[in-house]
Image (cartoon, rainbow over all chains, first blue to last red; front, side, top):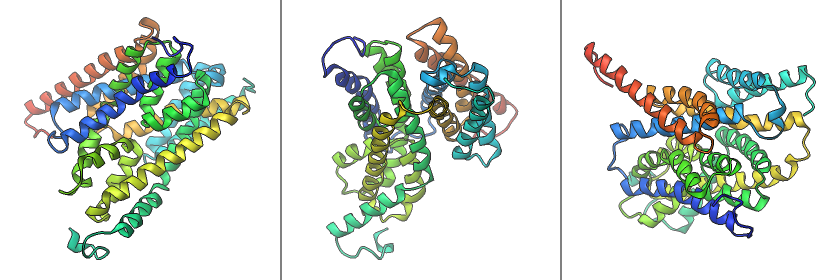
Length: 119
Length: 256
């Protein structure tokens, strides 16, 4: 039952609906249902948030260490340097997400340009 | 509340709703939208690399909407995960949407708001619309907030669906150096925006653990890397958070 398991036009859409939509809107609807009943600083929510944050962070790690496409051709240390540079820029420049992204990209582009990167 | 807003005297009419809907549209054009668009530019490149068709990518953008959930879904598709495993990983990454919605609802509704309206509007909840709503919604008259949030949320989705559709088509013809930079924008956006949104120390511990454990479990437990990293990293972060608080408690400091 993988994304490419069935050779029909509709299977990928079923996969996206069941794998993506159900889970995301499910938790949104749960949030509406609980409205104001659940305190945002409750202990269970702290644990759940920590788990969810670690999961998204794992995605970040994988995107940098095992990237797809053209980024995979850039050296690993340069990708890590770009992430570290982006984070340093974010912390140094008023915790601005935009400036953080730009610093990370600047590190990557400077590095790629220096080694004469052509994919 | 209503008495404070001079725009509305008497029962609100269609013109009021339309007016505030477009005020919401205008609020969406902001720096957070710019950041979100740059992240979706990266997402479109990623989807193309993952071998997802243009129609499927556009469909996914509108129907899932939360960017971390979509990247997790793409990651599951790329690693050949089965549907239950993919759904579980996406569900874990989306748990965070519940508390966001919970905190938004009390500000959004009046006693007369139908719950079906709230359920439909909740689809727009993701980091960007939530941040903008928390910042600007208090200035919107309460009966007009649902119309305003509808304008805000739908514009964010439409703009990004358009961006994804266009970038998907040109991403293949980009020079490799730009294509690499495009793919790097997603992890950079997640890292910086997630760090900013973490409310307690547990969130920051969880990020450090998760970033390191993701690639480690990618090698150790292929197919279950995200789940393993989420459970182990998140669990350890929560325990550290508990320990830290207990220690502070023993030292006689007040708990937060």
